[in-house]
Amino acid sequence: MTRTVIGIGGNVGDVAQAFREALAELDRSEGVDVIAASSLYRTAPVGGVEQDDFLNAAALLEVTLGPVQLLQLLLATEHGHGRTRGVHWGPRTLDLDLLWYEGVVLAAPGLIVPHPRLHERRFALQPLVEVAPFAADANGVDYAAILAGLPLDGVIVVGDPSLVYDPS
Image 1 (cartoon, one colour):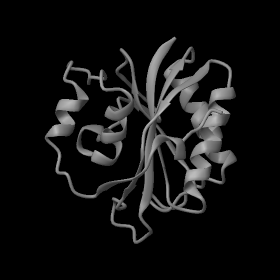
Image 2 (cartoon, helix red, strand yellow):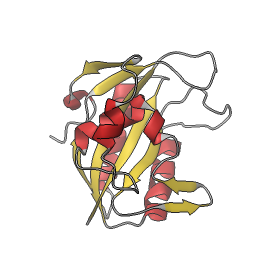
Image 3 (spheres, helix red, strand yellow):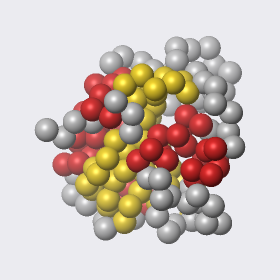
Image 4 (cartoon, helix red, strand yellow):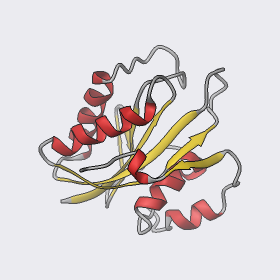
């Protein structure tokens, strides 16, 4: 089993419910165990598209799937929750991003690991560090140290991990 962290986001519909359902689906998938979920965060949208704030979280998984297989599963899960890709950085029901995959640096068509811009996005990095404080970038720099250098504004905890995923 390999540890990996996915980022979870959305701003259309009952987003927290979509998070819980998606993580339950992933946990039932062969080769995937959901180990932990982060707190629930509210964040301002990035990219300049006028839209509602996002809810964001992260989940620590243990997987036997490779990064490409995991990405395919994440995309299928998004699609099952009504995700469409009409507007770049636009509104979405569910966004599942492969943020970090232990021991892997990968640049393939449609997949870059660790996630590009992770080191500059508090809304992704803060929940990642919450569930995987041991995680480090390809140069061995702890993500917690990178997070400490980012501005504090724009990322607000709005709920505990049970709002993101409750395996019971």
